[in-house]
Amino acid sequence: YQVAYWKTGSEMDFGMFGLGDTVLASMPYFGATYNVYCLTPQASPESGMSMPDAVALTYGGSNVESLDLCAKNPLAMSLDQAGFEEVLAENSASQMALFVERVINHMGATVPAENTQSLNTLAQSIVGGEYTDYSMVEMASYLGSRPDWVKFDTQAKCVADRAVDPSVIGSAIGWTCSQAKSFTCEEVWSWCQNNTYRIADFVFSRYYDELTSDNPLVDCDFSGAAIFASSELYGGWTGSAQCVSGA
Image (cartoon, rainbow, N blue to C red):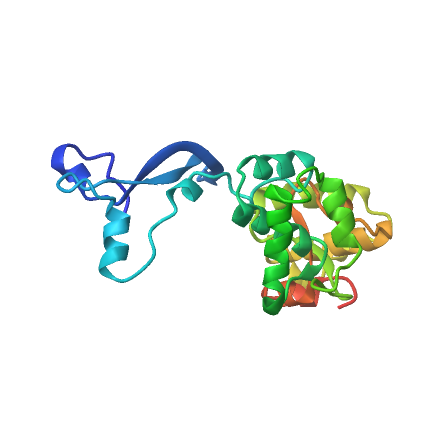
């Protein structure tokens, strides 16, 4: 699958993908932090054809969109103006659609499958249509007006984002416990205590309720550790629904 860079000579000819120059993210691993690079298709030394495309041709699939492989990950961008601008700079409607849907999810809402075209139309309008001068605030304001193609959940809760490393979640728990006024972190239920994410579900959801906020993009963030998730989303995470406020 990937070029074996630790090998030499002809042994490096077998990987379909090499590492590009763009760092998409970083990941902690046993006390060290490593960069995660984008992938670039490799050409066959014999034919010069892209190896991923050759496999796709053989099995009747679609060619790899190589430009998307090194695009900045819209699922890792901060949900603010800076993140919006980084995704916009990629000039890709598909990347913008992922970012917009992530914003929607962070507002406690989802896009039903039958309304995907409305999502894609908005993304295309932002990248190359009538909304090219949109800002993050304007986009969030529009989505906050609850367009009929977005499904909002009245049972949405501020919970730990499962895509975030537990060490980040732990730091956010510590800060939140030091700020909370309506509860203490000694009150975390026993069945929530054996998992960092579930502890955070208990703490974040109650602290957000304490704020009586209607702006989850700002107040349910905790330095990127939290998401204002629909019950459909957090209901799929083991034990989460039993630890959130109101459970």
